Length: 210
Image 1 (cartoon, one colour):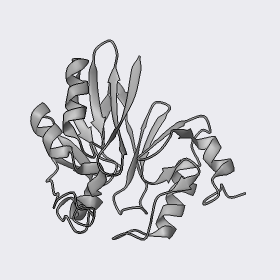
Image 2 (tube, rainbow, N blue to C red; image 1 turned 30 degrees about the horizontal axis):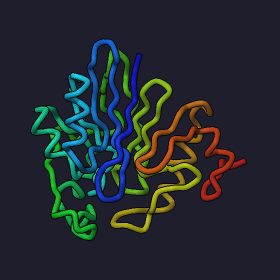
Image 3 (cartoon, rainbow, N blue to C red; image 1 turned 180 degrees about the vertical axis):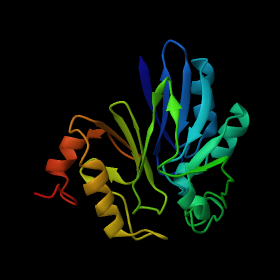
């Protein structure tokens, strides 16, 4: 059975998700946005075998803990190729503005939507959802969708930051997320969980088109 643990990390309390199989203990980390010691302590306490780190996008509050976690666990870091520019520049990825350091990291895998990824014997669907950043992605694992800062509970991610674009964000939500089954659970980069149906009906920023 898959377990999803949400840890609030970093200056902006970003959600770092540790996803793992409770029997085999194989898992991965999504968006280690700070406090690598908290993430590593959880991994150690549950004796997890972390195989990779996934990033939903390249903003500083989602990558601040990447280096510490990746080096300690000796695992590859995956991020969309369109956010390589952010990964290489602490001003563009906002870490300098947030006063959390000039954070950069050269990921091991720069993927795109056509890339193949398996986890626990099933395909992880990579959904390119640009708008918050050019390389923002959502990861669909079974009925669980990790959306980063594209969509929140009754809210949406900012599109006024470097390389953001509201039209792209709206299109991503309407065409990539709201077309999924309404029962799919949404795990956002900040705040509480929600689901596709809830946001389609009650998100006042972007409701599903009639």
